[in-house]
Length: 194
Image (tube, rainbow, N blue to C red; front, top):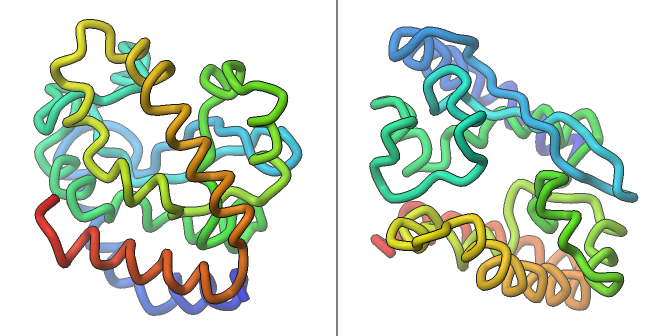
């Protein structure tokens, strides 16, 4: 089903891909697609695809974006992130089998290294574009903007909650749960101003 839905999604959204690609390219120098190593199923690394929302090489200054207007984020990138349109290229990750539509969001290796032996179980499930944690922490960058040490706050306060939500998903995993999470994701993006 993931492959079918992602394939249809790519076909239907191809005009959107083109428009967004042009806007990203006009907005700042650099490639249209941003690739980042993430940890996926069975603890294997893969490249996740997103529309580039930051100025070139900004990720070298830190992996976490802070506040609603992180200066590393481009003007068009701000709106892509706000509406989660930067995530659309992950349909290719789903098509290629790296990800599912719904599942624990894949982390970068740096943060996976903080997982306990019990936490590693989340790597037994194919990662997804959305999950409970994506909804709960939709405005994560805002939560971190006043932190003295955003990285430390993420590791000590946010990551444990995300892992707990990931485990909740694994316990409840079913077709109906996936449909519920997809609907909640749409509501969180378009239905509220949380």
